[in-house]
Image (cartoon, rainbow, N blue to C red; front, side, top):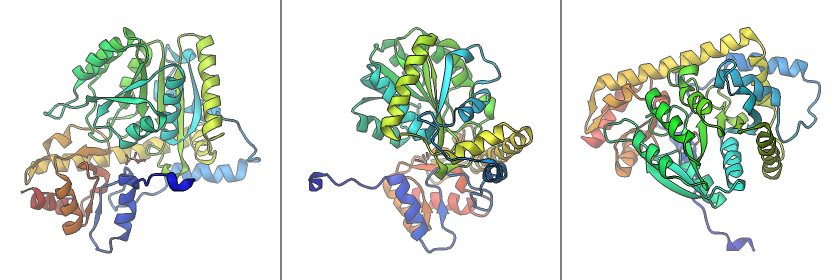
Length: 391
Ligand code: LMR
């Protein structure tokens, strides 16, 4: 039976992790998968997480099951950080824990599908796993252009599709720090998108995987907060992978906003049954550590300080790249105004291969780089290599 399966290529982004590890050259540079790195190239566990984990070991008295919704106190503790203190829509929203942001996206799209959605609008380019999840679920992905040639967001494209959408459609938007372009909607564009969504039958799914890595926790949530305050229903897929550095612990949450309490109850019951059918219950450890941080003012301050350090360092890298101006045929100036961990460089697959083979520089074949992989010790080498392969 199993011989009937068709071979699948390994995930191209995740394959870079192994290729980079196998490269024995000193001075190799990893700009592949989206993991934060310090100026020394390390990805340490946050000190606030370490402290919370110690408390967890001492205080946790049972590992008995929690249920498909996971640690609801974790999902609630995050809410003021995501949605702001006491927003007007707070009573209309409920959250549940998911295995990472990917689990939250999958659950959100599962709810959309169960509610009758057949087509999902997705900006191009997007995180490759978005399209893969849609394909796996049998949902039609309808692509729209995310960005304009001048490196700004193409807000008109999303406004147009929202204006023309029917009741069996959803749109998946990146809340901030767009992956892979780093190109976000401006606050004014979010205002217009929120107003258009309010007048449309389309369901909006917001993927917020990088809050705090762009301009700040509140600034990065502007679009999500605006949309939630304007529309009557929305789904938010949240990830703590990057902003708590919990990558392999798989910590995420799904927030559901419905037009009334009856519909919210219906949505929650469907989310619980989907979670049960998919993974039964999410892993507890990382979410419990996040909850302990958020229940403690001093630990929350430590966490926010660590996040600020990360954000500032990535901004410095962007500023340095932008100040370099051009590298061969690549204009680096737009990187200075983009946000978060990622940027897309206009390089061909062959040029990406040459960067890897000739210079030991690893990046996605799409031309995406993770700016956190650059630091004082390697940024000049990177700019020179880029000039070499594109010049
Ligand atoms: C990325 O885009 O590099 C990250 O979100 C990691 C992943 O799972 O793809």
